[in-house]
Amino acid sequence: MESDMRLLVTRWQGVIAHYRDFLPVSEKTPIITLHEGNTPLIRSRWIERMLDERMEVYLKFEGTNPTGSFKDRGMTVAVSKALERGLTIGICASTGNTSASAAAYCGVAGMKCAIVVPAGKIAAGKLSQALAHGAIICAVHGSFDDALKIVRELTKEMPVALLNSVNPERIEGQKTCAFEICDAIGDAPDFHILPVGNAGNITSHWKGYREYYEAKRISQLPVMVGVQAEGASPLVKGEPIANPETIATAIRIGNPASWHSAIRARDESNGTIIAVSDEAIVDAYRILARREGLFVEPASAASVAGLMKLAQEGYFEGKFEELRKERNIDRDRPIVVCILTGHGLKDPQTALQTFQLPEPLPPTVNAVKRAIEQVI
Ligand code: AN7
Image (cartoon, rainbow, N blue to C red; front, side):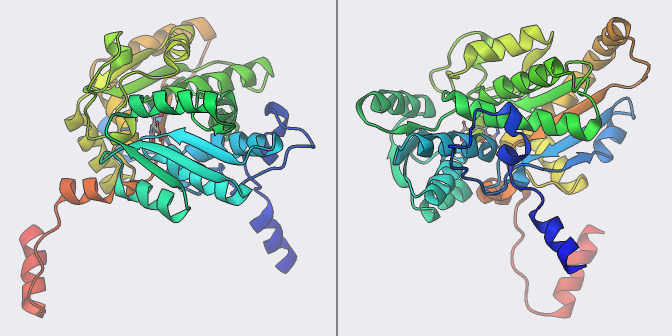
């Protein structure tokens, strides 16, 4: 019994150990891992009901990764490779999650980590992580896009490891999310929906599906659906946005680095990239927390906001009919996966503002009773 338990505890050793054959590592690579990945794929009940059971909806909750977002998948590969090359400093620009993840993994590797972030625009949870993990924090008066420009210049002048998703090793690691979805479902879903900021993740997930398809692990490729916030939707508008604005600070990005590969993922998969309003993001944020028990950060709720919007427009029916004919699918409902990229605890301030904390009460039974009776 005891040894069985030990086996259970130690079986999952992170995405490199599990998907080694698909990743650019060798025996010489020192593996820096926090046992990231293996995140839950949860069947949604309430959202399916809201959509009149017209589709099967699964939520991939990436908030259970060690630093609370999907970034850990890419960071384990990028930092391991940086260490293999003998680099001692990692650097990244970030809207928050990349910096939290980079700081943690660099710490484990014994490397220094410098993060360049837009001042005043990073959610409290993410900034506290970077601080706690000992990153050198350079907050600049500017946007994420300014920060990324600075970091790219710096990497030309200093022997540092660039840990943004413009580093292809980040993309390699992040594609394991697509692998896990296929392994869980037994094939690729019909539709794969995710939020898009700097566009690294849509690039990596599409790459993951294509590689699994080529390896004959899956029989079909999904239709990729990217979701941006209306105030930060350069890929939808078709041009960079100088002053992006949205409640979803993680995707407050005006000029995505992986622009072309995001468009390629969209077009090759016959998919779409859409924009949703901040109100729609907050609605999805509330439903996920209240009904699915999943507290995600606002950027992550964008994928469900996108699902709701497209469902309302009848997008899935038409598209799925095409797929059924093309692929001889005998299921009558599409399988949809929404990626929930980061944990709600990352951004407690937005939660407190959105859901409004009530005033404290006198310490009496009656006062508490009255407060409860008011809402039932
Ligand atoms: C929760 O941390 O860009 O399209 O610097 O934190 O691959 O950029 C974060 C992005 C979605 C968008 N959801 O992914 C950063 C950063 C969450 C995020 C995205 C981010 P990409």
